[in-house]
Image (cartoon, one colour):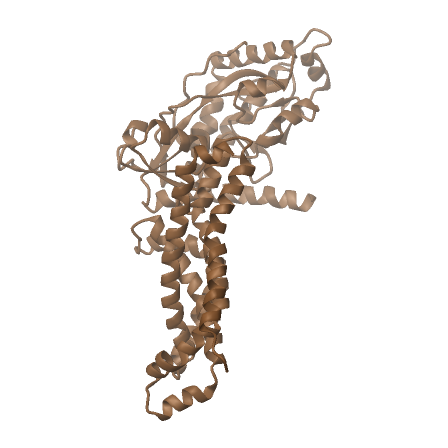
Length: 295
Length: 216
């Protein structure tokens, strides 16, 4: 079990090293100490903030396979926008960087990890929706993902948005929400549907399709792994708000997290985190920060 | 149940695509497989070697790899096919032909050598010996194994769903994502689609077998 886990981490690392090491290194360098640790931070007794501050450590669930947001680098440390957001929060809690432990969460186990206390927070490309609000609380959103379009480098077809897809060959995954969205709302686009997105990237590289469409976060990963073959159009046309998941009904902690997020939007640390991670891969400037939803 | 009725047009489109893909692939594979079997029993050593190499190379390669090569490898060699339907069809033809070849060759080997010897004694060239004397007798004995190859082909065509051909299995993945909780019904409906093709095939094979049987 242990060996396979290391092997998987190593494999993920090798893939990254082979494809985007320069962007990754640059990202890591820029990300060093973007936010100073609040050594003087103090919190009301009994709150989650006080507990974490006293323990001097926090466990954060993130993805380990999502380039730009949460990806294990060759040396075995996760990096990405979600990871940087985690570090910003830890710093505001007065927790030094070596007290922050990142644990891998996948889409299916995020609620369970929060509910049984395996992690204190989940920052893992976690879309806020009503079904999830029934079992966990969300701070944020801190980023709004959305369906976007990836084209060959130089955008030879001049595709600027979904309306330009009419009559073009567009690739996605059979049964996925983005494919369904194109089918219903942009019926003039010719859909080519595979079972995984990597085949769409192959088809785009071969010129067999004109564009690939899905959530921009997935496309970011494909752009990162594609050498210089692809580029992102950067004009999302749906909205997937990403939030920070925490234990349900821990309102004080949620308010604290929302304050930290708003602070990071204003003092530039949010933008710096973006530029150092996802932004470094896609070359796109940081978007406008979303409005925090204190529901 | 209602999910099947609501999506009947889509299911029928998928079924039709599976049927077209399978039948076209079968025609291609029968032609190519027969030629390959001819190569494998030919008196010329290089031709035998060619047939042997093809069969061993293709039938020992996973079908998914063959599909991948046809869909993404050929375009990189500047041999792009008009659409992913054609690359899928070609993959199925090339792959199935190897199995058809081996089935037919087993039938050829089952024809008593005296038949070919007698034909040669009459002065027939190899092509005529094979085409007019040996193969007609060989085909009769290979109806059941060819039936197996056909049924395998129909089911193998489902791999095309992963390579941009919207056939029955692709419809399964589309509907199972679109309609939460109805997976059992959709799965049954799609399985039924395959059975509609393969079950009558099995029945037809046994009819053919009886009709073509030779008393020896």
